[in-house]
Length: 219
Image 1 (tube, rainbow, N blue to C red):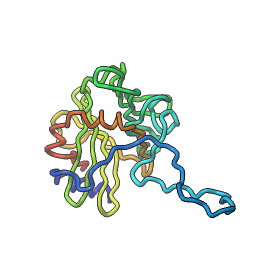
Image 2: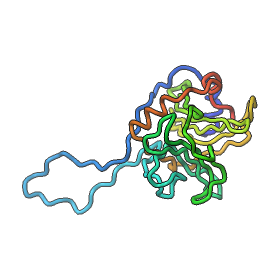
Image 3: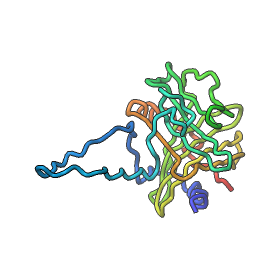
Image 4: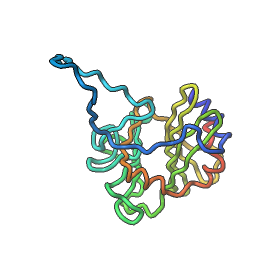
């Protein structure tokens, strides 16, 4: 149902997403502040934390992304399909437009089928980030870049009726529909952005075409 909803909603682009966005923070341990009763025995096991519905925070280099240890995971997921390939947008610590690097990788652990840019050079505004807003309290965002006459889009959309969809599209120049459109497996999306990285990605230019038309329809 998520694919059908996303296809319908892609024609309704406009306005700011009603659910808004908040900056992501790195995973960190938290300690309960409630006071225990005097001489009360400690529980044998702690209650497990509830998982985040849209994404899980995880460190780079843990096998769930193609980002190396010591890098930040902007967004990553396992793509649906028998091959269990990964798609990851990664960044060096403290990256800026003129120093450090951001890159997109797609492939399996230890082997990239596709890497952009291949030299991991400074971003130099080659990546874009566009907020997506649809009717029905549905919204999200899309990271995009162009390479060889094709636009690559890594998107994340959520909204009413339990809609949660993330995926990667490749669209040829001026084409109405994507050449390829792969969705992320449920609960496989991870992010580990600190506030500095979040603000940096939010400073990227918006994609004018996505701003105007929204995500291209998948069928």
